[in-house]
Amino acid sequence: MDRTERFYKIEMLIRSRGSVRFDTLLSELEVSPATLKRDLQYLRERLGAPIEWDAFSRGYRFAQEQWRGVKHELPGVWLSEHELHALLTLHQMLEGLDEGELLGRHLAPMFERIHAMLGLDEKEARELQRRVKLISTARRRANTAHFEAVCSAVLQGRRLEIDYRKRSGGLGAAVETRSLSPQRLVHYRHAWYLDAWCHKSEGLRRFALDAMQAARLQEAKAQRLSLKALEAELDRGYGIFAGGTEQWAELRFSPEAAAWVAQEEWHPAQEAEREADGSLLLRLPYVDATELLMDLLRHAGQVQVLAPRGLKEAFARRLREAVAAL
Image (cartoon, rainbow, N blue to C red; front, side, top):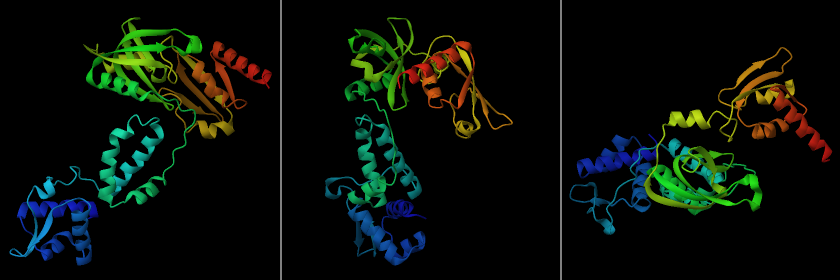
């Protein structure tokens, strides 16, 4: 039994019996007297448990429920120390993904309680979190106020009005106002996107949150679509690009590159086959070649585009342009 479980058992025994003798606690918890004394001290001093010694019953009991003006309760989750450490690791990962503290500041009180449950002071908590490092590049920042409005619209099923500037037109592109029925939030490669039904274009579209100039939550209810319809329309492409005619790319990676690519998932529907010489044949669907070409360029010199012809020509053109720019 780890310490967190002992805390809950001490709490349960005292609440159910009113008063519990020291030797009874030792027997129930199967710990040494020194360990039990430390647990009782920690519960009182760190978790605010109003545990006191009652001379009449010669046992430990809870004082008045309104002890120090606050009703006492242990945290309402039963977690082992291993699970608590896993949550702290998740917290560090979240901080690495959470540019601008879009989510972390709302979860901070919960993680402070976890630190307390593990007996960590501020210095120990910082040291523990430094043991997990998440390296990220090319982050894109989303306005915190916009993120909260978008998140509320998705979860509450309400319409959203946004002012949006398409990236394709650069900084000089006009800002358009659109009325949306949000469907889901998507986090992809350090950026947030909103999948929504656009009432202006009458279709499903994907909007980058960092391209939103404003986001206003509306009172009207959103038009909800089934997740199956959403996935069929927006999840067929490669990467974040959605919509368009589906095509299948056929790629051959050299034995050197195959050692890495064979362990990667480029698309959930991909088909991979190892050849006798160690090279890898990879087939995967795409609807827009933009992001696929960027990933292929990472393996320039170690990948051949076999099909379709349009993708092969586009890849060759990008390679020539790269050489010409040297």
